[in-house]
Length: 236
Image (cartoon, rainbow, N blue to C red; front, side):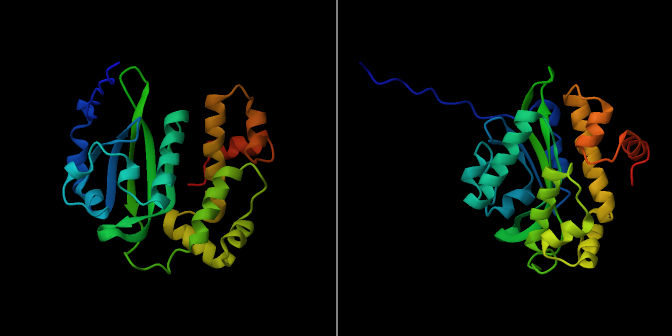
């Protein structure tokens, strides 16, 4: 039998309603902007992202997968994040993580990723931005343990987590921990914990049939009334 003919896959294209976005983000050199399809291929990027990964032109990236662009240590993390957004529809907001600055210098950023939906509401990709947090090359400002601690908080906000426990987990004194959280998020550690719990509670109220009281307890609030007060008057 003759060998099967391989049909070339069409190049991914950016939806027409988003065509203006890349141009908009060209005016933010301290941020990397991107749109990816369901397969993880880049549909749009700004020039800042192009230069961060060592290329000169957008055409060098468009249509390629993140694994073809980044080192494995970055690519696996980004791919896992994208898969979670595509699977659940839940955004990633202000995730503290290491990224590349121009000419592949490592630096800290805050990454936000949102599900990209078509006119029918079906998730068809991921759109996101990574904003530089500090000057390149200054690795002493943000300890690596802080990022791991914030991931821990996102996964365990329903437990009785305290600012002092988070500081200890990050290997920092409570004072330094509080200063870093304030600098990055303009929040106190207690406010960050409360907002993380409120975000988790909102997802549970939308995605499950749990009662308000059940959601309150699952998200680390003492009781229904404490949850209601926090929801009506958030800490910021």
